[in-house]
Length: 92
Length: 232
Image (cartoon, rainbow over all chains, first blue to last red; front, side):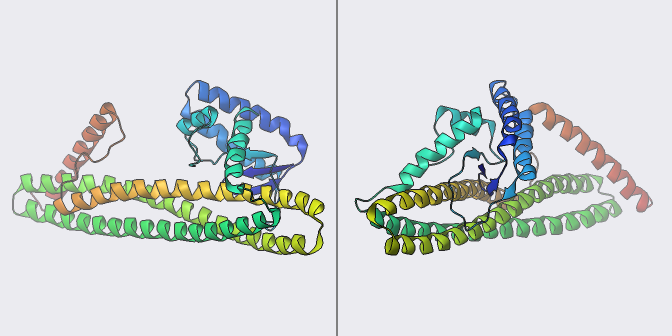
């Protein structure tokens, strides 16, 4: 599967990593609900590191749509909330 | 996949906006290519902007360091002249400036990271745009309308995702440099005035008070050692 880390390009990963990413993703959502910005950032960084560690960077001249999009590591809790409400982050 | 799913949706919405299909699919390819070239120009501008902001902060850091040196020697002279009040004032100002220098170091490091990210994004986009151009010509030359449609959709989604991503990176970097520009203009003014107290911002009352206490004690101990040095 292809994973894009926003602002950092795409990675090729084995689908077996999906479970691990899911677990971190769930923790991130819990942090958002608890408004725990510190742990939120920590988990997001962990998610990004997992993708980089387990994946191979995709050749930049390949044009492929990603299966998963990971937000940028400097995403704030506020912005994450906006992602859920479907506004912000990306301007029109 | 809760945050990740939502992120995917956000990008899809943006991608659909970018694709903006024309009636003739081949025209859509050309249109997208034009957009890609424009975006490439925008990334280059973004890199230049970040570089300029970084230089400006480095310049300010240089000025502050100069001022700190000056205040140090002023404090020394003041002690020699038995003017402890003046020495204290100089050390207080120096303290404020030291805090600013630390803040600037962090911002400069941030911008450096931002710069590296945008440069890498520019490289990736350049490679993709070139590859898209070749693909576009192949599609135009070799495929029947029905076959072309599939190929066109494939390459358009892929490139639109890249464009949405790069577009966002530029937007975020612009916001960061705008924010720093405003703060650095305020800092310029304060450097001119020589009054730098309480420009720490961000922290709450308790942190500010604690910072003040530790600044005061460090000023006092510095005063003592200056006095000792001057044999007073």
